Length: 134
Length: 134
Image 1 (cartoon, each protein chain N blue to C red):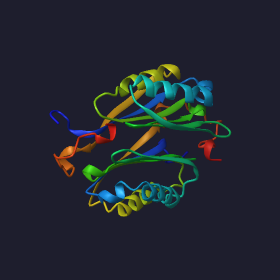
Image 2: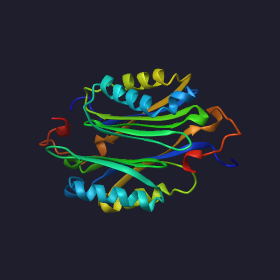
Image 3: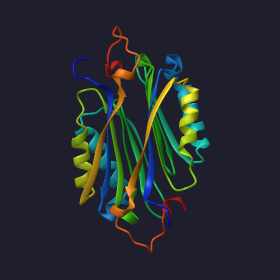
């Protein structure tokens, strides 16, 4: 487990000044989120999207590596995006770039958070790291 | 919008030293996540849970206020929990407390993140705040 410090990594992104119509388009949001999960090289298990009245879309793509989620506020040109991955094969920043471009975000603020920091975890070296991805 | 500084609030919690068997029990995890969403006074829209082989559970409860998600690593006694809510009526800390107790977590580390900070948002006072919850 050389160099690995955590079980998962999460990108928490705030997308500002997006295209209001795109943010409110359920089919568009669903499509770009699935594409984003694919671009991040993750394995899609399922997805669930919902359109709110009078506006807004929420959706989650459940992936083997955790999840990719979005919540949009078209009235504010805003989308909250979370990209939670584990393992070394996924590329969450590619997912963020795709979503940002596809929503025409003019400002993106994001942070990366380590989840399941190994120094706090019950280490058991006999068990395989990332067995859930095997 | 007096006193309101953001559109959403997210609790990002790492639960360490949980009960390994409970973390790996799909039915248990699903039940406590739904209960957690209810305790937080949120409106459940749908949920999706998945059991990994050889171990681990992932699940998301989509709520009108955003989402409640969990990913478990039984082999490390660890669960990653995200509770993303918007509006003033939800009580996400109650959800976190319920999940932590139900998984018998001995150590919980969490942070609270503001999402959609209003000073960055396209403000349009003529539109209703949190219209998606109306």
